[in-house]
Length: 275
Length: 104
Image (cartoon, rainbow over all chains, first blue to last red; front, side, top):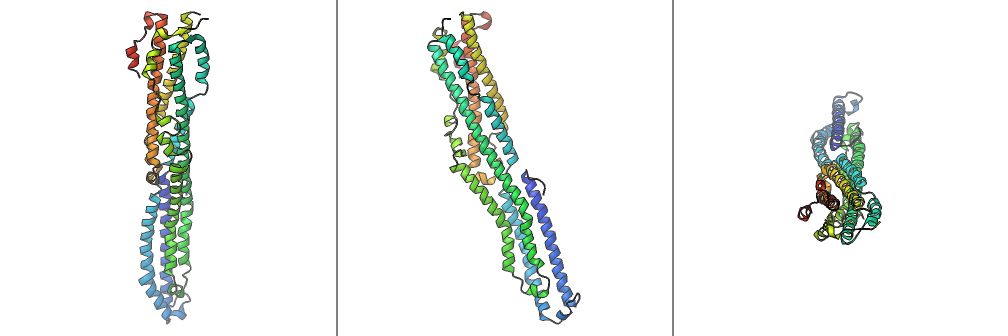
């Protein structure tokens, strides 16, 4: 299967594997039917079976029990597999793009020490009530940029973690799916003579069929556990970011207070320092 | 030290905030495609609040960047206005306080 980056890649790959599984199942059905026909007509070394009740019993069981079960189970596998795969829907490549955007923004909006250096010159040139108000506002706004950049960084990490988890599980599912269906095909491959059909154990085959979609559900459970951890228990969780408990307090930008603004904008409050 | 030299300090700080205003404006544009896209985490993420929390957080980040731009633009104008007042130049008239107040 080609590299899995998009949900369509996953579904296309599973669809191809299902087609191969269907083909292999059809081959087994045809082989078993031919084997029973040959046994009934004495062809291919089954002469001793011509008069055997075993062949009749095998044909009856095949026609009335096993073949209908295979058809029903095939329908069930298709339905359940697509239901289980559907739970994996998502757009991890988009999420990786978003994480890149948050990360690049984080680096651009805040440079530690930028304001501090400029304030050295400012403090040398200005003092007074307006200057004090400006310094308070500038320091608050600069802190806002620092907190916002931290929040964006945390969001970038969480976003890329989720995207990579989804991609990892998709790729695991795609890599293993054909192997799971091969196990089911394998149980029919053992039916090489009429005796094997008579004693063929449907419950065991059912368990193998069920295992196909159960394996997918198990992978989905891993994703659920990861998402729950992201949302609730991880120290840098979405819940904390969404509530503003981390990064920018309450996720609100610190607006310039009108009192500070009025003090700053009154030229009478600006006192140039003497040289 | 003359007022003219000192007003340059105010103008330099105005430039600092103008630069920040440009940066956060660029940042808003950069993250816009990501805002409110919690659905991209998939159905299971929706069941476990990750998608909702992401949407809440990403919208808050977009709002914060917009508010930041407003504050920085105001600071640029306020500092330039004061510098203009000191320069007492007709070409660089100071903005009145009411105009500046409307910016925040």
